[in-house]
Image (cartoon, rainbow, N blue to C red; front, side):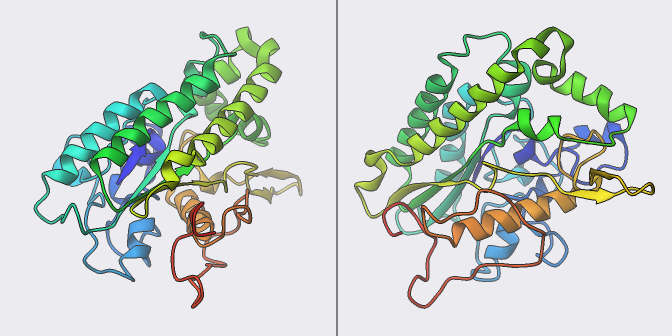
Length: 313
């Protein structure tokens, strides 16, 4: 299953124009899409299908959250932290009502990433001093809901990327991208808020720490059938660059959709490569940046044939 925003919904992953960014390409979403095979679309479910062909719950094709093809993907474009508990409830309903799922005996993997919309459209209008703690409480409430209803479940919290650091480093953007950044992310790009950018940078770092804190909460290490782990490849994420015709380093926009904000299919491939490797790395030794897609995949070892958590690392 998956909880998140437009990055989970797959917005614009297959876009060829700006209008297409509104299409939710859930079937090829990095964390929950299962359309085709991993050779066609590198996604987490398509990789897991190599180990378990009977895997269920992944999104099947382009769809909205309430469509059947969305399956166990409750991500919504525009969603923010305070939407997480509701999303968890909807995910539980879908899992419990699915005849393919043996609730007590089947193992479940839920990927959660939330924060981009909070950073882009909310932090410039709320009390930034209390925002990280509110996010931590939302996460704890969400995890408690999942723990109570879903046995044999691993929840992985993908640490929110520091958009303030990433987007501000972009170079060589075409004018359309500069417009879409201002439209989609006014808190970080709006002229009225430029004098608060250092404050927002520090807030996002505290937000990330709140996610680590929620993932390491002792209440989720008490049993053998429920665990939470933070996957931090996004913590210090650096965006790829390339040389332009003049020999200058510019942002490699092939990893981004037409709005230069959401991911392209190539960007999703890079993200899920990093996520997979994080899953195979012990807690405390996980990479905090991503690397080239397809180049290196960690594998379960004979001594550790499992996904690492706080308890088994």
